[in-house]
Length: 243
Image (cartoon, rainbow, N blue to C red; front, side):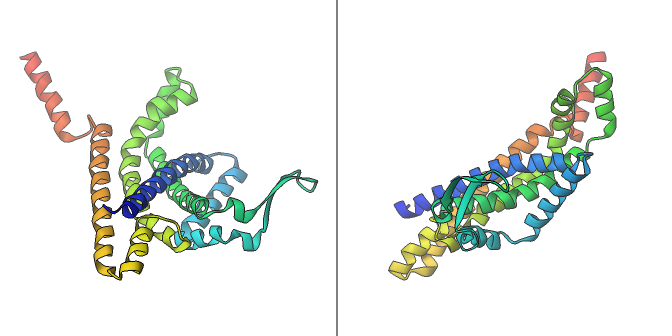
């Protein structure tokens, strides 16, 4: 419970939350793009997912952190025209922004595949039935397709949250003050390497266990009415009602 350790734990949790939210938003857009009938958009999303799934997150973190070597200044302007605004890259790409960019883009690539698989798992007849009932495409997606797709999306998404929480330990290589970096700072001073690593292990286990319990509750919520026990219970209730 050293304040430095708790601060690092809070930073790891914050990176997990931000990376997951941004990754899910971008991943949803990428999944929609991959399912689009517009070929250039579809292939652009496929290439994006392939690149960011293929490059290890550690490499991505180091790349974004050292982006200033490639682009000393980041500019906004008219394409092939005048430059309107520019900033030194080192002022914008701090360890925090590099960590958020790297983790979010990596997570977006995986979430795109998870969401795409969830949407494709819903039978196309469901969309046809919703259209026949007069649902708009938006209402068909939000009220018919998405609730059914969530049963497929939730389990791997929960695993991705846990993987991202553990993956935040990688940001210690860019001097980001996460949980692992915090214990490293302490054991570099006290030389108690193994005890401090055990502290990090305990905190990771506590957080991952809590996230697993939350995942199980969310899974039960979205699988209501789909289990055999629920079907059997409704059958018994109907039989009792008729009796």
